[in-house]
Image (cartoon, rainbow, N blue to C red; front, top):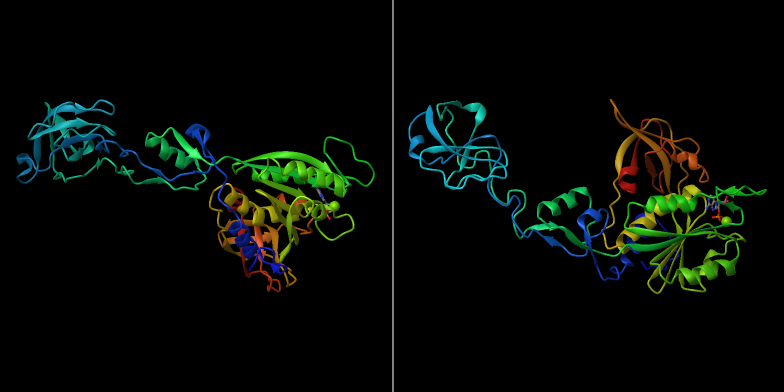
Length: 413
Ligand code: AMP
Ligand code: MG
């Protein structure tokens, strides 16, 4: 299937097409400190430059011994003189003497020649000697060098959006800086004569505008710098001149409103003055119209204006493409099964994504839609923590039926 298809596309097909249309990020990579790298995307694979931990260490407080020493060549109990100490940060200088034990603490380097730790709670210590019954086994309570990661092993893959654990892994291997792709530059504007900013007063027939804000917030976890270009009137030349400015200096432009086929829908015609256009009818409710286009390196997404349609299209279709554009692997959709606690109506024809409330109860995972699902109702999100997916053939479900849900956790992080 070609990207300029006129078919009704389901979201999995649309996601595949968009992600396949992505070329790798325009370099060059930037080097950033790991303290500033959270959420950035690695431009190279990172190989561990050293063993972590760098030396063989005791995993517990106790006594290091050499399990092959003659002193263990008979049946227990064992009595061994203690000679030397190794503390975390203060290794014992000399090797363990034959038939001796050394005091060791968690994280302390194992003295040379020792290979096992006897736990302090299993010994009786007196007069510089320890007495215990359990035969020391080689490697017991010992963390070998490279136990966490071996030198030369892969530490972080290329194209990974760095999370707290990745940064900890880099820090533990002594890597203080990492090469990442530049942040994507994304411009956002809303269109509609009826729209006003929340810090102004409403003229008759106007509504307060919310889409620029929700788009910017939903993109915040991604390595994206959003430029807010404000609200534009339903005026083709005004929209076209904004496009002409915005394609310079942005990797993507996201607009809301004005992409259906109404008289006041000028976004698509305005875009064709600056770039190529593929208009899609997504087999998706809410959110059927989606315009996608290209002008040089700049990608254009024209989202529908109804706030719920804007969000659903952004999360399910646009976001994965932006993740790919940013150099990372798009987060796969996670679908889980839950039992509907109320009947859910659905008209077959298009897949529908209702806002749902998913709860873990003693009967298992249960879900219900959050009230009226009209695509203008931002309130349908307020109690929601998932989307309920009703595929295009689904004739609606009865209470007690299983449905698939997409938890917000997987869609928003
Ligand atoms: P449109 O996609 O322009 O046909 O708009 C569809 C519906 O969404 C209309 O009721 C608009 O008033 C409303 N709408 C459009 N843009 C926004 C916006 N940015 N914030 C809130 N509602 C909007
Ligand atoms: Mg409009």
